Image (cartoon, rainbow, N blue to C red; front, top):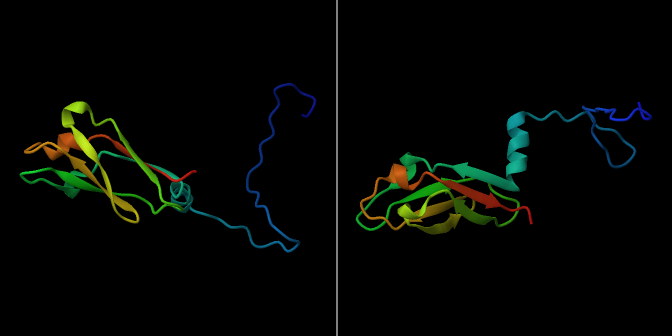
Length: 121
C-alpha cells in the first residue's frame, strides 16, 4: 500500500504510553471526550429563555459553559444590531451574563445568537 498513489492506511484503538510499562486501554465515552474538548473551545447557541430575566432597564440571561483550562476569551455573534446587545459579563468560573440594552424587549428574540468561549491560546 505504500507504493500505491492515493492509498490510505487507517488505524484506530491505539493508546500511546510513556515508559516501558503498558496500562489497560482507556475507553472514554463520547460525552467525556466532548467535555475534554470543550475545555478549550465551546459555542453556546441561543441563550435559554428560561434563564432570562427582564426588567424595566435591561434584560439579561446567564450563559453556562464547561469550565475552561484557562480564562476564556468570550465573544458573541449573530445577535444583530436591532437587538443592541451590550456585552458579556463574567460572573464566575463556567458562566457569564449576556446583557441587552433593550428595555421591554422580548427576551426570546434578543438572545438568539451564539456565545463563544475560547481558551485555546
